[in-house]
Amino acid sequence: MTATADGSEAIPASRLRLAEVVRVGLHALATRRLRAALSALGIAIGIASLVSVLGLSESSRSDLIDQIDALGTNLLTVSPGTGFGAGDASLPQTATSTIGRLPTVEATSAVYAVDAGVYRNDLVPANLTGGISVYATDTRLMETLNGSMAHGSFLSEAQRDYPAAVVGAVAAERLGIRDLETPVRVWLGDRWVNVAGVLDTFALAADLDRAVLIGDRAAEEYYDVDLEPAAIYIRVDRRYLDGTRDLLPATIDPENPEEVEVSRPSDLLEAQAAAESTFTALFLGLGAVALLVGAIGIANVMVIGVMERRGEIGLRRAIGATRAHIRRQFLTEALTLAATGGIAGTLLGVAATYSYSAVQGWRVIIPPVAIGGGIAAAVVIGAVAGIYPAIRAARMSPTEALRSD
Amino acid sequence: MPALELRNVSKLYPGTPPVTALDGVSVEIARGEMVAVVGPSGSGKSTMLHIMGTLDAPTSGAVLIEGLDTSGLDDDALAAIRGRRVGFVFQRFFLLAGTSALDNVANGLLYTGAPRPQRREAAAAALERVGLGARVHHRPNELSGGEMQRVALARALVHEPAFILADEPTGNLDSSGSKAIIELLGSLHGEGRTIIVITHNEEISAAMPRRLRMLDGRLTDDTADRAGAP
Image (tube, rainbow over all chains, first blue to last red; front, side, top):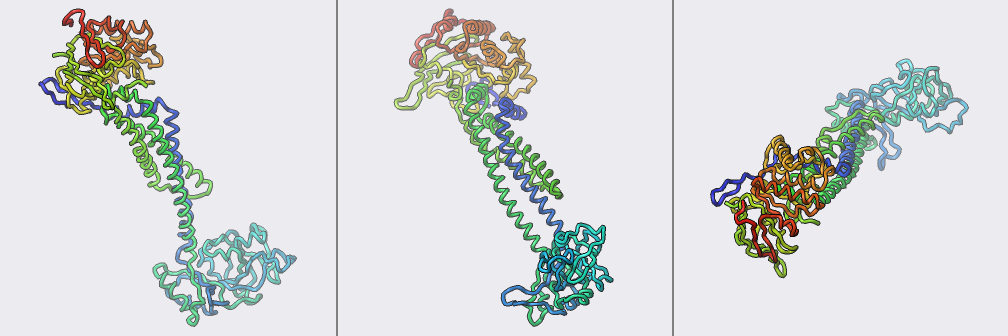
C-alpha cells in the first residue's frame, strides 16, 4: 500500500494471481512453440540418458545379483595353491573326508583329474582334445554347486561304477552334442562312453563347463585317475562362512597350509557387478554433461527472449507489474521448459529401459530415485538456468524497456 | 484536485556534461482536460512522458497524481500507481502477439489482481467503447494498425485511470487511422476523461484544447483555447 501525504485514497499494491503467474509464464512458450520445444529437448535428452543409465544398470545388475543369490554366496572352492613357492602343489587325498567332518560344512563334493581325452569319435587324432578336461566326481556335485541339467540327468549312484559321462555346457558344444533325443556316445580315452546328461552353465565353477564328468568309481576302474582332488566344492553354513574359510587350509593340509587355496566364486560375480557400476558412473557423468548442455540451451533461449521482449517487459511495467512479477514470469517460463523436458526425458528413459531390458530378458528395475530425481534435477536446472535471465529482465528500467530500438 | 500536477520538476541525466532533460517544469492538468505536450525531438517530451507516467522519477520537484505525492515512493508503489491510475498508449501499440484483443485489453487489469472473468467483462465494455465490439476475438495480426491502436487505447482506459497518457499515438498510423484515433481521443475527452497526448505533430496538437510547448527541457508556452476548459 502506498502512503498518502494528504489523506487522498491509498492505492493498493500491484498483485498477480498465482493462476495468472502460470498463464503469463506459459503464454510466451505457447507463442514460440518450436523454440520452446527445442530447448526443452536438450533437457529431455539429458534426463532420458540419466534415467535410462540408472534403469539399465540397475536392471542388468539385478540380473547378476539374482544369479548370485540363486547360486549362493556360501560356496567355497578349494584347489591346490598356485601362489609363489607353491610349486606343483596338490591337495591331500584325505581332503574331502576331512572337510566332510567339519560341523559347519553343509555339503561337499570333489573332482579328480582323469588322464584321458574325450572326442566325438574314435577317428579324431588324440592331440585334438578341444581343450576339454575329464574329471571323475561323485553324485553330490550337483547339489553342492546348485547346478542344473540342460538335457538328460546327472550321474546316478549306479553310474558311478559304469562308464557314463555328463558333459559340461561348453564341452557339449565343442563335441557337437545338441540334445540327447537319440543316444549319444563319446570316445573317452580308449572306449565308447554313453552320455547320460548335458549340464547347464555353472556360474560358480566355470572350469566344469569345459569338462566331461564320469563317475569316480568307474574312473578308477577304467582310467588312470589322480588320487588327489583337483578341486573341492564346499557349501558352508552361511553364519560361519568366514571362520570356516580361515580354518580350511590348516585343516586340509596341516603341514603345508599355504598349498591350499580357498576361494569364493561369488566374489567374482560381485566384482563383476561392481565393475558394471563403475561403467554406470561413467555414463551418469556423460548424462550429466548432456544435462548441462541442456541447461545452457535454456539459459541461452531465455537470455535471447529477454532481449527480444524488452517491449513486452516495458508494457508490463507500465500496466503495473513490479520487478518481482517480471522476475517470476521469466522464472516460470524457464521452469516450465525444464520441467517439460524433465518429464519427457523421464518417460523416454523409462521407455528405453523397458525396451532394452525386454530385448536382454532382464527384470526391469527403475529406481524411484531416478524418476523423482530426474524431474527434480530438471526443475533445479530450470531454476538455475532461468534465474539470471529473470533477474536481468526484472532489473531493466521501464523507460529503457520501452525505448524504441 | 488536479488529475496531474508537476511542481518545479527537473530531470538530470548524469554524464559529462550532465544533460538537463527537464528544467523546473510546473504544470497542473485538471480532471477532464485534454492536453497536448508538443515540441521538437530533444525538447524533453519523452522525459515528460516518463515523469508524468511515473515510469521515471524526477531529480528534483514533485509529481502528484490526483493529489498523491509520488516523491520517495519505491519501485513497487510506483508500479501500483501505474497499474491503477495511469493509462498508457504507445506509438508501437505493444499488443501481445497470439493473444486476442479481449485478453490484450483485459491485461490492463492484470496486475490489479482482479479475477479473470471480471477483467474480461471490463475489457469487452472498453472494446465496445472504442468501436471494436465486433473484433474482440481477433488477434493483433488480424487487425489493421488503426484497430491495434484502438485496442491499446481500450487497454489504457479499462481500469478507469486518472488520465490517459498517449505517446505519439498516431506515429505508426496512416492518415485515416490517425484521424480515427484523434477523433476517438476527442470523444473520450467529451465523456470527461483526462487525456494527455505527447506529440511532435503540430497538426494534432492544434486540434487539442490546451497545448504545452516544450523546448530544451523548459515549458515555453501554455495556451488554452478556453481558459479553464473542462
